[in-house]
Length: 256
Picture (cartoon, rainbow, N blue to C red):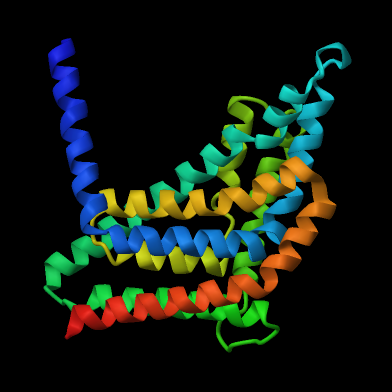
């Protein structure tokens, strides 16, 4: 492949991604907001222990003579791990959008996308209710989800001993498949685009939204992470409720 052909390929790819991002900007923003809210309330409790374990293991492999503030920061950032999670989420988003797009084209049923947005809104509303101490029927984790999470944990366990480089990336890939309601809601919203590129970008934005809270845990440790979670415990429900309403409005515009 010549340099000109490679440049044309990259230019066309950029144009496709840009067009999908513009056409589905509202969904991308909504999922970033959902990731930001869910990351500050839910992900700290669920993924925080994974982050702390990796930070500890990474710093243990830095020689004392080489220890510096920069090495501490890079060790706590866990960029390969977060990139692995983002890859899994984005891949799932692309597949979900591809499948929903096929159904839409086969049936011409215009209400499918609106229904998926409503499902996403219900999942986010359910997480807002859980944060407020309420329980909505039908949104509790199933035993099958727990079994899958346990299997993925066993698969990832050997990588925790030295989560550096590609091992940290693979760890993120594996743990990105751990089931949770917040992820289900994000996938439902990504599916509503019926466009694999948009689904990929939407879930990448969702993953990006979850990163700040986990960076706080990695940089500051478990105590500060708990304080951050406490501060977000009243902000996150508001953001998730607003986001849920935003998705319902988007669904309504599709069917009116």
